[in-house]
Image (cartoon, rainbow, N blue to C red; front, side, top):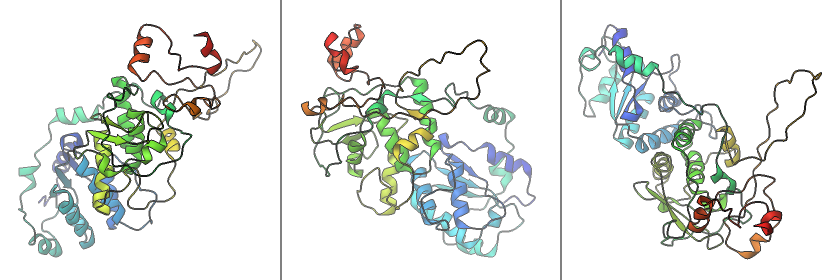
Length: 395
């Protein structure tokens, strides 16, 4: 209870907002009492863009389900809601449903001398206690406020990032049926996807966590980044193929490339994949395709378009250098260059695939992916399976 609406308590609640440490503070949008608006406020506090596209505009159920999936997949344990004295019955029921789904500890801050009658009535049905704001929300320390004001620098912010793993995203083959095999580890199959530098990994994780509220879309692109899988391989992943703790994922391809493989999931991608799996359990309680929306969203962008929205793409062909005479006018603003998405056959294992015409469109081939080719690259030898086809006979 904050009967005098003290700015010190509001400031302290906002200063305690730290999703990475399990604390979420939600400041509701003023002037609205819609349940979907409150769900969007929670998603925004989680760092997700809102409103969430692909669903009926006034349907709050998908937004609440997505918020629950993200809370379960991240270390959120406390949710503090400001302006709770303005809650309406349908908004409070949505909060209680979120609490039942996630087990999160709910803290409602009432900036009024008394609670509304319906709120007192509803709280009698759940375990709760009433406390003064001065006891739970002391004045925030200046050091905490200064630390939150100064955000960590991102060296790669707003820059395009070329990821060799995305070179093999587009494929020649069609998707295959579901598989229930016990696939070996990728290292046992002698397959090693490209490794990102720590700075690049941190930036990719930052973008994927904030680029979309749809868990399956962020999880699909994240999996392509750390496995170098194609879209057909990604389509084979079901919820059962993800380990319960989100540490491994199995992708299938029925021997067309290097066979079904189990890949370790890096720490930065594990919450994304777990959120996609949890959304299936929340929405339909079945083991469906992991990278498909169980809530039935429509009209969303393709995976390649989503990657471009995140400014992630495969290494591009070298741009020709334009010669400019001395009397030429000063160059104007550069037009955006369309991203080239090659069709790479480097990871295919069948002979007929390697005889296909070169569809790289000038893009560089991906780095070596086997022990033999990686060792050759370390010694300065170019692997014979990589590079332009017309130059292979010279190696």
